[in-house]
Image 1 (tube, rainbow, N blue to C red):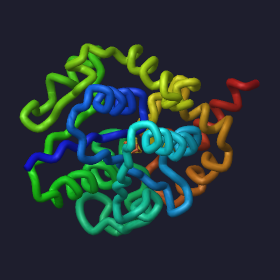
Image 2: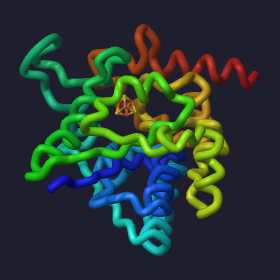
Image 3: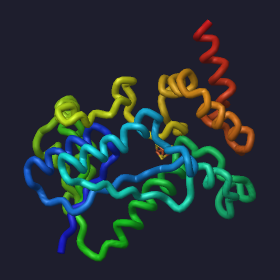
Image 4: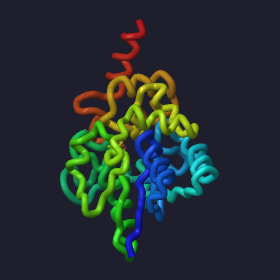
Length: 237
Ligand code: SF4
């Protein structure tokens, strides 16, 4: 038997995709979400997204009878950060911050738990992915034997996905801040998003600054969080 599984990030494309799957009566056995945790109490999502997710889950349940399964790696970001490396470079040091290229968090906290979960399913799996019509390069890279991109197939653009989500009150508030999601501790995030974190979530900023003292590498290549903070302060002056 084939199982149809949709990946949901709670961004506009994956939520619009779920809505269309349900509206069109396409087969759907399970919806999974990779729940990256900073620690046991703090989500890896930007705070507005972390608040939105349980609300969105309730709407999905009430309006579409969808339950989202959370897939979580056995360690949180913080636990992995402080794990001592046994292989590769920097043996004997903790993992520290992920590098911008080849970030350990992407493989450990995201790809690995999802891959393990899918492997544990004793059926053929077809995965639905939220790729909009204006993302042809992502669509081309898909393995079309095992993946379906309903938005792309229906020629639904990112802008149209926003309107579909709005209809059901399923548009994440992160788009008000013009962000695309991702973890608040992501070293790859744009400077504008880091500035936003510094200004609006000083508690999270302080956590990162304290961790940088324990890391063998700086948060960004050749740039410490203190450097960034000084830059942001100067801009304010
Ligand atoms: S969004 Fe950034 S921090 Fe989060 S898993 Fe991806 S690369 Fe890592």
